[in-house]
Structure formats: C-alpha cells, structure tokens
Picture 1 (tube, rainbow, N blue to C red):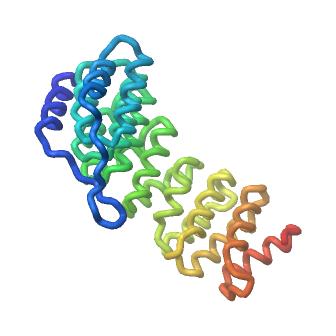
Picture 2: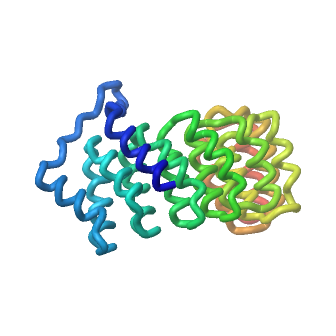
Picture 3: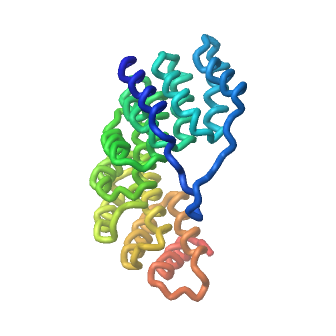
Length: 271
C-alpha cells in the first residue's frame, strides 16, 4: 500500500490541478499559500506531533490552494496515524480536486473506521466514475456511518442505480440510507416505500417520506402515498413532517397531497 500511495503522490504532483467552476461558470481562483507557510505546513504534516500534523492538514484544506494536493497525498504515502490520515482525507475532500480520487478510493477500504469514513465522505464531493463505484460498494460497509456517507454522496450526484440497494437498507431500518432513498427514488417506486409502513422503524421511514415530499420533481400522487404513510405513524417525527409539508404550501394550494396532510393533522389535533 505504501508503494501504491507513493505512486499516487507522484502522479498528483505531475498532473495539472483540476479546476473547479463557480456557479457562474468561471474558474474559482484562490490565493496560493505563501512559500514559507507552505514549507512549514509540509514539514508539520510528517512530524511525530499529531496535533501539529492535524492542524497542518486542516490549514491546507482551508487554503483552497491546488498545490496542497500533492503535499497531502505524499504525507499519506509516508505513513501516519489514523487520526492524521482522516484529517488529511478531509482536507483533500475540501479541496475537491480530482487528482485525489485514487487515494480516497484506496482509503475507502481502510480497516480503520474513521479513516474509511473520511475517505468515503471526501469522495462524495468529487464527481467521478471511480468515486461512484466506490460509493456504491461502501453501501455494503459494516459500519453505519460509512454507509451513511456513501448514501449521502450518491444522493448528491443523483446516482439512480443506487435506489435498489438503498431500498434494501431502509427495509432493514438503516437510518443513514433513508434521506438518500427519498432524494433518489423514482415516483413509480414510491409505493414500495409506502409498503414498509408498520414494518420498519418509524423514524427511518419518516425520514425517507419527508425527503420524498421535499422534492419539487415528485408528482402529487406519489406525494399522497407518502402523506398517507406518515398519517399512519403516531410518532412526533411523523407529525413534524406532516406539519412542515402542510406549512410549505400556500393556504389556497389545491393539491390532494396538501389536503391529505391537513386532514391528518386535524385528526391528531394539529393546526
């Protein structure tokens, strides 16, 4: 693994920095780190003082300087503690540079849970086919926080093929998969989600239903299904989700889903 990381560091050094575009389409230009500060941070990354190394990684992640990417990858290749490795991966995630994807993918299989989680979370912010494949694979991770980070990343990049696996996770009351499933599930699959009412943890189902209701692209018949599922649940979270949905719509909104939500709230004493 050390040899592989060294090769990735060399590749990142040789490759041109990936350009991230701002919302308006222009390339964002961040002021580079001063050379003396960069040299100190590079040194601090590899010292035995864990606190100094963590602080250096954080600073490099905040600097938005593309020249930091090879430095961070090289620090990983030299070997470091799990705490520092996780912070370096978080910094690489903050920099959102595609050159870091291979090293993130490598660490997504690390045996240390915080390192694995940091790698998967970082991958979620950088669109790439390699990253998507890793995120799909990590939906099967044994740790919930890693699965949750993978689900969040897949939802952010709108990976529709993740839906079957997310649905299976939600059917097992996996809380981390619920918001992502709600964000990705197509309208014709919503009845399958509604069928889980009374079969899985209410909080998990509520989170998925609420995510479906938050989508502007969801047709109203599917929204009605979700409202009816929430109406059949007695928990405070379900009531809150119904209240939020009803409140988002104007008072003169004639959609059946809004009327259903209000009826459900009236039955349980809501306003």
